[in-house]
Length: 195
Image (cartoon, rainbow, N blue to C red; front, side):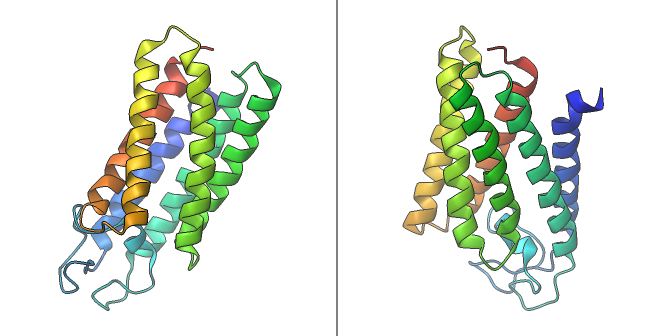
């Protein structure tokens, strides 16, 4: 029973911990260094990981955020391992399992000073796996999942483009939209997909 729901349980725990972290974030954002608290439209999730908040105060949110990222990374690793068993093609199954798991290790390392490099590595590996999954979904008659995969890919690619282009004014919102679309897709694939 626990194995069946480990992805969902981990994502719920991760989300709760990250939400708690936002409540403890002292303040400051790229657009206003003196702002108070976490602003969902101005702050990045990575702001929660720093020793000091952007406004210079000590950041007690970081501990909650670290554990949130641990649970998120472990949950998504479990997803890639479990979902890979649904893929019939051996090479593709191994790519989804191992590149997905490696990508989630890099996802956790986003909390370190190597943030930018880890974003690039984890995003690249995640998108490779999502592309493989999308190809297999397109071979089925599960039209809703096809649409969800395409939407998730488009949102993710758009967010990465904005990140690379330095469009930091809209990027915090797109980051949260990407997070929601990825979690929605993962949970839908976990519970509704049959290959």
